[in-house]
Length: 431
Image 1 (cartoon, helix red, strand yellow):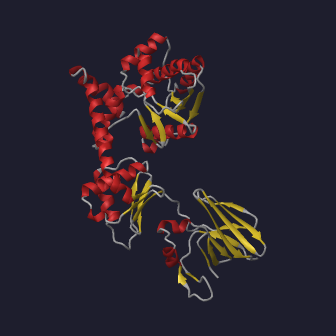
Image 2: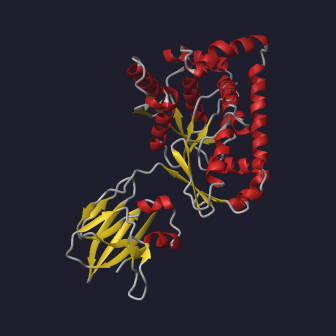
């Protein structure tokens, strides 16, 4: 009966979805998920299954859990990936472990694979309460869905309608062991506090409490989807999906409610966690309504929202490259700092051909050959003369003419012959 229920849940996914990477901790829930997938494959041999175990290194038993998972996967003939991660504990153990875990999974997920997790009905209740504790809106209270995207990963949760007791009975009947993570009993962690100290009393008073929470979460999700649908015409007017930018034309004419809703949609589309109402109001005040000649920015997690020429941009944190001076010779390829790609200098006839291969574009410049030393820098604040018939111009004006946002101007490689500025690669050359 449980197997049929599971098959029905998998059937709700896209018909082309046949490849799954199963999150396998070795605990009860993920063991049930692994066994259900293995059994389903007997009826559907086209299914391609792999499992991944994340070794967090937080428990003295972690190595033993790896051995256990390897043995279980060998029994059910599902290949297992074991990935050991390093947790940045300054982010908090729970948040750091979650981020490290999803980064490892993202590194292994194949193009047509979907990551499958073992979240069940009681997990859904806990997620709803944690969202409630944070003061989340409809999107947060919508909790978990059967299919979603998390940390840019396509993810499915085929056990959301299963109770933990159902999974316990299934694994016991199958005769498979599982491991118990001792940290799951530590009520210092928020989820464990709910699981062991709060929710049992609510379930004792109201036996169908989890069912009710699941219905409420689904209502919230559907209301959020309806809101998104109603906002789509205006959202399309303000958002450039290719550039991930937000156009601010006529933004001031919208009601504060619609302003915040559109911004949340944009941030959600960009994969950022939802800001609080206070953060969102501060973003609107400090960035969107800042003076037109200012260079406002607002930090959201590890990203920054910046404004330039009536557009909002979302950027990561950038390293300060202003003092760098990188020598380069003709025929050499230089790896640029801070993920800016490579710069190659080649001689073509009587010219120097410069190629900047950035992860998002390739730009070129041509310069006269020189015997002077050549340097790559990222900052120049002087005058530039583009042709014999033009007057010197401040480089700031040239950046403005090319529509280059302020924060990107110190991320474009500048070519110097000795100490003389010669080129902003791909944009303009000086005499």
